[in-house]
Image 1 (spheres, rainbow, N blue to C red):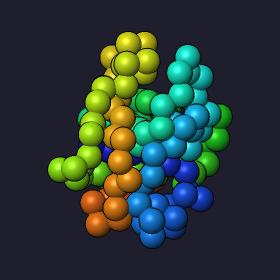
Image 2 (spheres, rainbow, N blue to C red):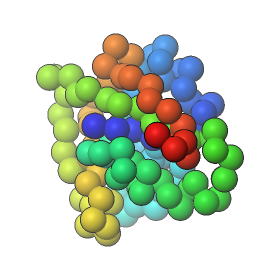
Image 3 (cartoon, helix red, strand yellow):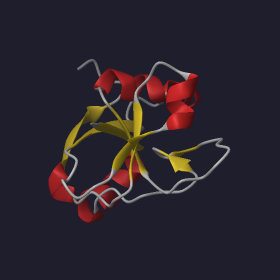
Image 4 (cartoon, helix red, strand yellow):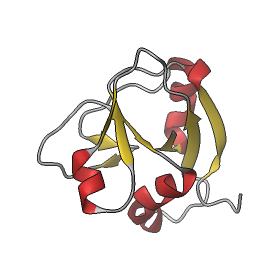
Length: 114
């Protein structure tokens, strides 16, 4: 799985892990009919980029958004995000646990050519 986040969150994430959030989706506000505390994830790097594309256009700084690869711990409950996935063809997921730093791998800024 993959997670997108703002540059300012990277240090905390790699010290404390990814923690379930309520009304925040990968570092940007999310309009939802219901708020669920979760870590929001995507199946592929491409879907992570597409899931955050509207935010990238609002802040075109190529170093603002970053992709993290996430290994899901066995104890973590993972389910499809019904609101996000139903409005697009992007596979968005919600993890209901804190994901420790050892399950995370920093990849690169979202806007990089990799």
